[in-house]
Amino acid sequence: MSEKITFEIISPDRTILKIETNEVIIPAFEGEIGILKDHVSLITFLRPGLIKIKDESEKIFFVEEGTVEFSNNNLLILTSTAKELSELDKNFKEKMIKEAESKVENKDYSDKDRYLLSHKISTLKSIN
Image (cartoon, rainbow, N blue to C red; front, top):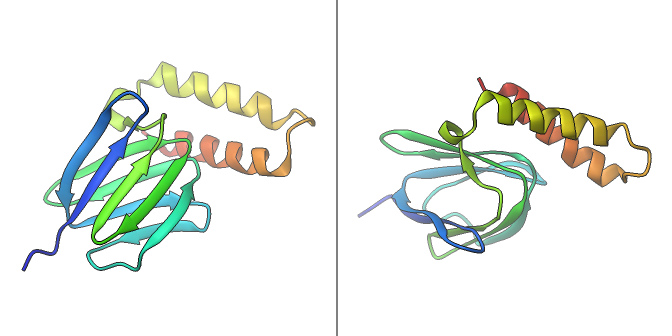
């Protein structure tokens, strides 16, 4: 009996990834959530962070936002911002950090927006 789940990341214009895997860790508003075979059904939202796909090898994607649905061992993420870490160069990361830091200082942003921006900044700074 297989211990795998089907995992898809879909953007508005294409399927970014579709694989069978053992475990996926997602950055949800509730915190990091690990999804394994037979996990309880789930619908939630992503916050900025890293999606970690654990199998024989590990794949990691940076994501800013999105929705998540898990049901019947199928995990679906809908997002327009998923990028594999190998696609993020140093200049791109630094530019995103500077933009987010300038927005955090803006008093017109809500606490929710600042919360999301702070997660984006800390995640981008943690990427080597």
